Length: 420
Image 1 (cartoon, rainbow, N blue to C red):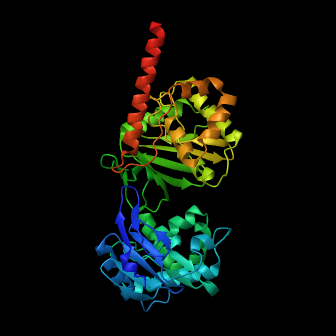
Image 2: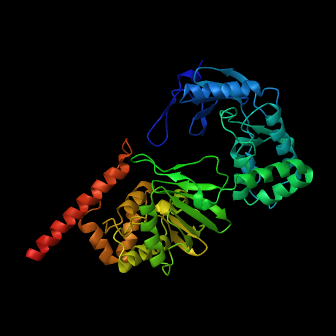
Image 3: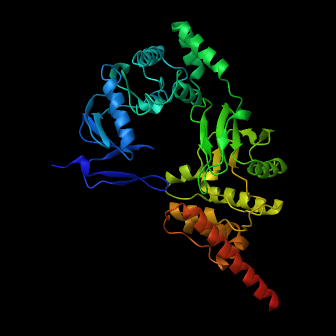
């Protein structure tokens, strides 16, 4: 008989590394561990850190009397076996709602009240951790921080409801159903209001992303090496930088190119932040994952961006797929910190991305038809491709080395041509 204890889960450079010699399917993965389905009734979560496994087991044991807790069957040094739910998460359940059902609000309030009575310090749960069973019965998973983090009000729940535009209807129902709870939450936020201009974002270690405060209720929609992006209104977001010079670099690019159609609108700037339009839509990398072919229209739009970059004097001429968003106003591009400071005349990362998606050959065929001079330029000195990601975060370092190597070759070829 197969034993789930043969499965190993360890931390890799960018994601978890899983060795699963069993037939138990992987059904979920987060920052702490991975979840595997054992049967129609049970699943096991295997942790990378035994301390977190112990914390989860203790929280589950403490909450076995609560109706919304999963049944705990077994725990070990790096795992917990618990009840499996074949049901949508609350985030999925509310996806097409224009207002939150009052029945759900009542059950969420009961859940939060019972967490408080059970002496949990984290009175909270993001929508993706709440499952909706038959008759709208709620079940909540991931309690590893139940006695560690201090969330006296449901910060993550409110953050998620705000993202899907249901926070206002939820709070109006809370105010009607439990006015004292609403007042307590309102008092908390009035006492702990954080101006987005002062949200703490610090630069990470070398090669790592910025560090942000997890208790901030403003929705975090992304973070990288230079900054973190928070959604502050339905149509606006703010990028807060770990280093002021990165903010200044991107500000210079954005403000001097507001007339370009692919540059996001800027509404306000400061020494460490930029308020810009929130781009509603998938990025191009997400979009192409679901496509069987690369349309000529997408190639034409990408070429328009690259050609415009060269015309206005960008030094870094590239368009990584994850930086391009498909909006109702066309393609928009984010992350321009190095556009004026990093010498890169060719779209090396875009080429790499298209290679990874399997669309590079068709892209070059379309470029040859639409922009033959660019095609000749890009193929004269072949753009290097990385066939596999390398450990130690060296993808970026290797890419940078390839860019420098290609630029050196191009400069040598140019020098030879001039001598002739």
